[in-house]
Amino acid sequence: MQGNTHIVGGITASLAFAQISNDNPLLLVGAGIIGALLPDICHSGSKIGRKFPIISKMVNKLFGHRSFTHSLLFLILMVMVLHTLVPFKAISIGILLGMASHIFLDMWTKKGVKLFFPVSISVRFPLTTRTGSKVEKVVFMLLTLLSVYFSYELIVNLLGTL
Ligand SMILES: [Zn+2]
Image (cartoon, rainbow, N blue to C red; front, side, top):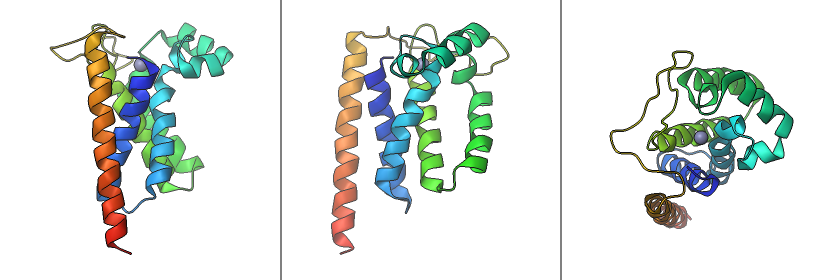
């Protein structure tokens, strides 16, 4: 999936979580966007790969595309890293939600993801689409609508508590 689809996926996931938590929605969403871009560090042409070309090349050489950084193992390691380094729960949760949304979206592509890395099987849904396809554009639009709806709900709730 393309960077913009992942960004809006991360926003949707963190806004969905914001409905049921008391964490600061802005922190959740900001962190959600970062988390949503993080797994594609394995791909030097991605938004985050272009920002950190050296790290990106290293990760790609070591693991290849959509493997370690798209796996449950990486998610679990990030839970531990964030728990140790980040004092704000909303930021940690946002990053993890963004990452999870990224992996979930990539599972709708033909290539799938190496979800169980280091086991090298590719995991994908029975229906898949190509990156940049019309279907992806529709997904992008639906996620955007969902984000707008979640934002609306948050604002209504916020106004209700004033
Ligand atoms: Zn990816």
